[in-house]
Amino acid sequence: MGFFDFLRKSKEEERQTLDQGLAKTKESFFQKVAKSIVGKSTVDDEVLDDLEETLITSDVGVDTTLKIIEKLQERIRRDKYISTSELNSILRAEVAQLLRKSADGFPKDFDAELPKKPYVILVVGVNGVGKTTTIAKLAYQYKLAGKSVMLGAADTFRAAAVEQLMLWAERVEVPIVQQGMGADPASVAYDTLQSALARQSDVVIIDTAGRLHNKVGLMNELSKIRKVMQKLVPDAPHEVLLVLDASTGQNAIEQARQFTQATDVNALALTKLDGTAKGGVIIGISDQFNIPVRYIGLGEKMTDLQLFNPEEFVDSLFE
Image (tube, rainbow, N blue to C red; front, side):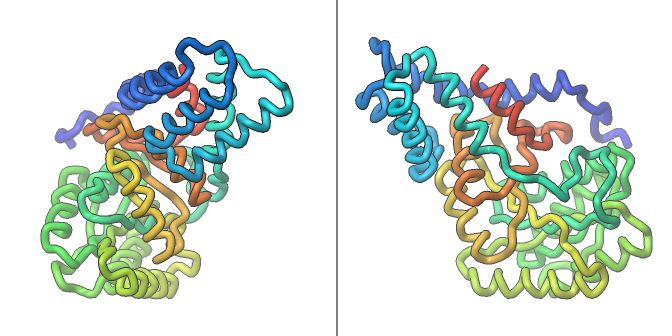
């Protein structure tokens, strides 16, 4: 294939990538936490107020922040006393709890046995969040794991979207079904799935347009895509993956709100974590929408898209 380095990262290398990717978030978050407890030996109301501001300004989100603060207040009422040295471990436990969302029914790893074949992933999200590159990275990772992959270019609203996905398909060397700009997205999705069935493809990944200025139109389009695919595969799509740009912070939460109202999103991908101090947004999004984060983007390389592991994320963040 030649275009990419096809050596899969070891678990140690993946952890190193995660640590490096979260470096800005860790530095920003813990500097703020340190300032909120400086000169204090116990967690009092002033510390909680400062911590609340820290969490909100770290893009955890107001609702999730209040939930964490309430848990801390409960702990203080129960134990009568919390030292500032205990605060880190308590915060760690609360964040870990908020990130634990059921991922039953999804493949546990790229090389794990697929729960369905073909395993159909419908990708949604606005332009500019890294949707197309996330699709390419997913295709790459599944292909690297020995699975056959088929792409569908159903974002027919923009010619550039079709062309970009075609370019990535060529680079990753996976087949793609496209009908050009202006084609019916549902028709593209149907043809993609039909072709995948004929080829006995393992994984099907279909791109869609994300036009939030017309939520009703988006809702109707995604509903139509789902219906035509179910004529061929009754339980498709298995993953409705919403791609969000972590660097946009609270705007990512608003996009999640809009898309979850428009369609049945059941998985999330957070991109560009390596270039931002706003990684705390993962905590808020996971909590508020009760949807598991499936993938995180930690760099430009094809192998820098990782399956999200809540325990490893918390370990890295609080290390």
